[in-house]
Amino acid sequence: GEIVSLVGPSGCGKSTFLRLVAGLDFPQGGVLTYNGQPISGPHYDRGFVFQDANLFPWLTVYENIAFGLRARGIYRENKSKVQEYIDLMGLTGFENAYPHQISGGMAGRTSLARTFIQEPGLILLDEPLSALDAFTRMAIQDEIIKIWERRKPIIILVTHDIEEAVYLSDRVVVMTPRPGKVVGEFKITLPRPRDRTGSDFNRIRREIMNTLEFS
Image 1 (cartoon, rainbow, N blue to C red):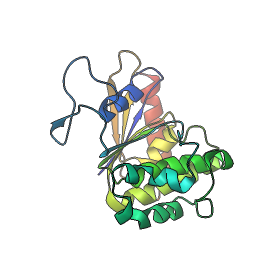
Image 2: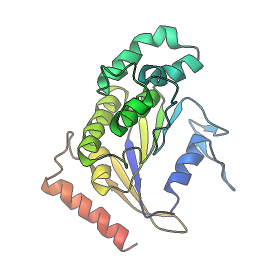
Image 3: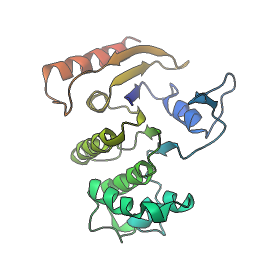
């Protein structure tokens, strides 16, 4: 039920690790397991949100969010959830808009809702907020926490933003450049919602940055 962030320089293997867990790529050696079973390919219990929203341009916001439910044949019994997630993500009033008619922030919210509505046990986030302005980014971080607190799925987040990692995570794992390896792990017990300007928050942020600089 934790949120775990992976931070480290470009090329250290953060996104590759997410793709391996998602079943989009496969290890050259060893075995990855999830709930005791080898990962042999993608599965709806492992949701993936990419850096780009990757919305279907021919579908509306509503239809994009409902897509996975329809694909699994469970839309009818979960129909009410679509509007629920639209409201949760601040998309009310844009249900019938197409991707080209909404902002980047709204596209990001739609992409997150499309994954979270499946209620996967594990959610992989590959810098989904990196292209957003600071205000929108902070707002969506709060939405992620709000939705996560409902069911406490595992979330693994890849980010270059140390503040984002400290704000969202229960643990932050620091990686080195090639060959990618773990050089630090920080357990964060600050109560939520977290004060980004607080002394403890900034102390942890500095410690993580120092680990990155000297690794």
